[in-house]
Amino acid sequence: GSYLLSMIRWRTGALLTPIMIFVTGILFYVFIIFREGGVISPMIIALGSTPLYLAVIFGGAQNILSKSVKYAFFDSTKEMSYIPLDEDLKTKGKAAADVIGGRLGKSTGAGIQWGMLQVGYMFSPNVTLISLATYFFIIFSVVLIIWFISAYSLDKEFYKKIEENKACEAEAVVEPVTG
Image (tube, rainbow, N blue to C red; front, side, top):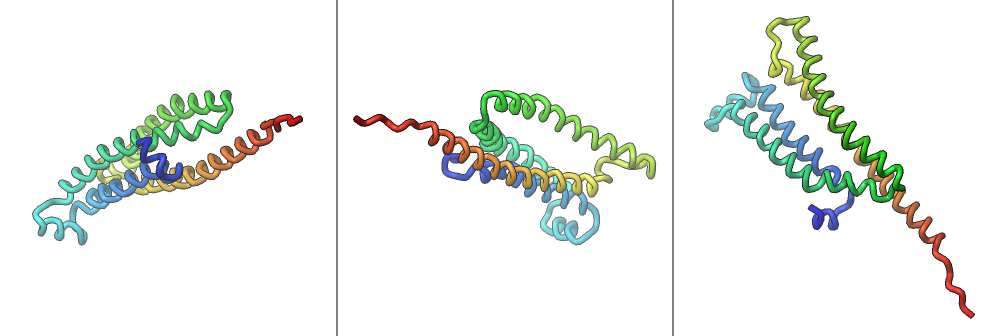
C-alpha cells in the first residue's frame, strides 16, 4: 500500500475504495433488483447461472475487495490527511474520525435499514429488505456521490495546507550571516 501510494496522488488513493465499492455495488444491486423477470434474467439463465447466484458472488467480492482496498489505501490516505495539520487539530481530527465517525457510520446504516422497514410496513405487511433493494441502491448511490465529492474537496484542502506549511517554513528560514 505505502509503495503504491508513493507513486500516485493522494486523491487517487482516497478514491480507490469508493470506486471499488461503487463498481461491485452496482453489479450486486443490478442482480438483486432484476433477479426476476426483466432483460437480464433470461440472458443469465441461458448462460447457466441465476441472478441471485451472481448477486451473491458480487456481494462477496465487494466485501473482500472493499476491505482489501480500504486497508491498503483508504486507511493510509486517511492518516496522510492529518500530516499537514498542527498537533491540536491532528489529535481532535483523529478522535472525531476514528471514534465518532466509525460508530456513527455503522449506527446510521442500521438506522436506515430499520427506518425503511418501518415505513415499508406501513404500506405493506410483506415488505422485506430485498423488496426495498431499489431504495437501498438509491441511498447507496447518494452516499458514494457524497464520498466522491468529499474526497475531491479534501484533496484540494490537503494540498493547500501543504503549500501553506511550505510557505511558513520558507519564511522561517534564517539567512546565514556572512562577514
